[in-house]
Image 1 (cartoon, rainbow, N blue to C red):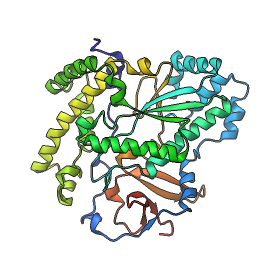
Image 2 (spheres, rainbow, N blue to C red; image 1 turned 180 degrees about the vertical axis):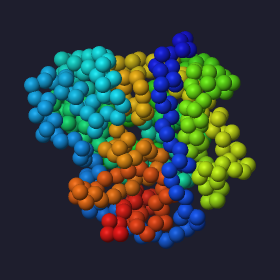
Image 3 (tube, rainbow, N blue to C red; image 1 turned 60 degrees about the vertical axis):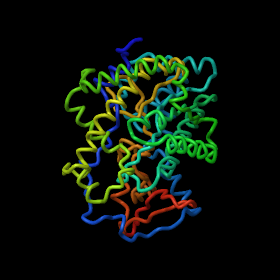
Image 4 (cartoon, rainbow, N blue to C red; image 1 turned 90 degrees about the horizontal axis):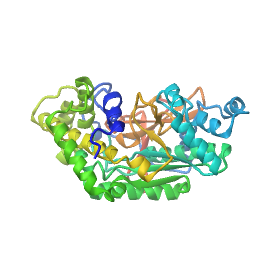
Length: 397
């Protein structure tokens, strides 16, 4: 068993292992509980479909100009240029180009007439009531994400007839232990995501897999590695060379990702915990859980890396990531504004849709729901089942 798996060491030393999901560094907390304030609310209508389509479009990518610039290049280079375009790739584009591995895998797929296989671990249940007021179910943020990925696959198909397939590795059940969510809600979220994929009609280009099921075939090796790393990180959080500053950022992100809904805390306690005060017994309990949860989270990630699951189960795939890295990796913008106007993942908040007068189009960001609910300049849009789908800014105001 290779306990010092290079892929994990690179992540732990040079890049994010957990996305920056902190709540205390940029948001203004209302004095009174916004959940108790009245707000304009309506159900989804047919007109919302056009708004959603606006949000899926990659407005910063001039497709005609791209085709003109890429004309004359081999097919595999045109595909590489597309996925490495700044509107799709948020990690270092020059570093990604320097590695021969990814270009080689694209070339092989083109030569054999196979779809470009893109592998991405994503989609988890986050039960922080500041981020989402209701249970974690697929909302507009998830739908925009899935449609966006299908859109990228279609653009690749226009270059390479076999197109592309996104293999999304859901880690909802996999990270249930550190995040403190039940297997029931974790499985239900994935089931609803699959239904959404089917409803959209993109199941030929977007395929969901469960990380726990993938690794279960080698559970003896996985458990041995997990328990090793768990002991290491619980004894010394910096055991793999992580800096203290990075650890503090990761710890705050973990605290904001834990299931705090099951504590049923009042608004003042939530604000004290996540608004920067960090006072009180509840906050001490939160950070105790966060330290343990972060050790478990990192141990799970390290154990998976030790198995080299990507090449074992998805050979010749392009390994994409939702995290900022310094190594050669495809940092995939999950929705068009991810890492532009917004930093939260679709399941770390709620979709907020605004109108841009300059482009005459709508765009979507993902924000903590606590900071948009109860505001008179936003309308809450709900689905047929009563769940909030997104918030729509009242442009007139």
